[in-house]
Image (cartoon, rainbow, N blue to C red; front, side):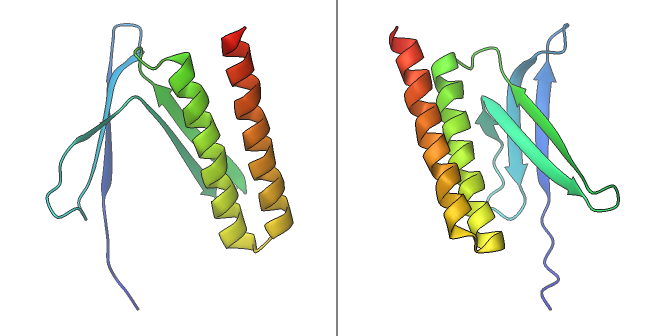
Length: 113
């Protein structure tokens, strides 16, 4: 059994209105832990006792709508891959990918209007 442990640290620096100005993260399983900067993050957790999903989502003031559109699109693709690996449900994973593509096309059309 692998008893490896890793720690991921998240740091959000907030302004006086509690809006993130910067988001930084680091993981101790990198060869040289370096604080990485991000403009947005989504963390989803499953509480097994209450059988409920919990999430934290943050984005900085500098995150543009275009960047958010791409971030959400890529997150949907990642969720599709995760769902497929966890369930082997290829059909519904494909449906989720199709939705992600439809979502991206729709937001890009809105931006071009």
